[in-house]
Length: 70
Image (cartoon, rainbow, N blue to C red; front, side):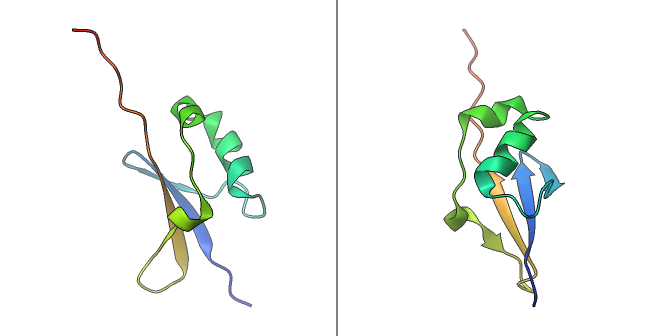
């Protein structure tokens, strides 16, 4: 049985799946510990993009733009 390797794109960084058996909500909670800006975003299973060889699926976290006064 072949399983897809999940990767997560946060800005320019590509992060390996910290918990391959967990669902996306749990992975987001884990990643939020290192990347607090993920607390205000959400990904869905449909957001995954397969690579050309169909061996990896990448989820791109949409980041909320930084607000500045001025």
